[in-house]
Length: 195
Image (tube, rainbow, N blue to C red; front, side, top):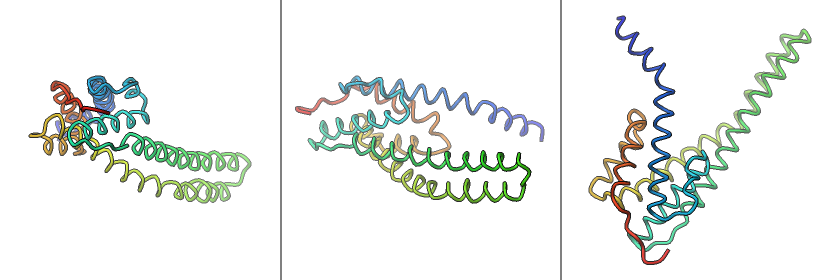
């Protein structure tokens, strides 16, 4: 039983470090692919919401190069991700505000009223923002999968399905997404005739 406990404690302890390392490796790969595709402002991959603009730009570039289709995935991804971030901010604002109001009332000596405030104004008001954020999160995830598919289909057509499944699988995507993007970066992107 002790080795299992040690393994679990190691994984829990190292999880934030692995997540940060994966984020940095993914940003390097995505920025490199954006530079190879001649997308302006590739440094935006380091900004959490703006990185969807770059991913959408790579998707647009791939669609133009492979099929001659001019799409606006970058605009759609950026708008959806921005709205999702605002909904999450509103949710946390409500919950934290409700908790702070409860502490203020608790200091005044009304513990029953504090619990009511925290539940009604914090958590219940926050739920009005949570559900749209979760639904929009699914939409953003689907659009991200579509953008990754465009990227993989253009750079590595024979491995596109495998790379896509590895990139979105929750268990292995911390390792797989940066590795798949780095493998794509090794290939030169096709250049469209006109952008």
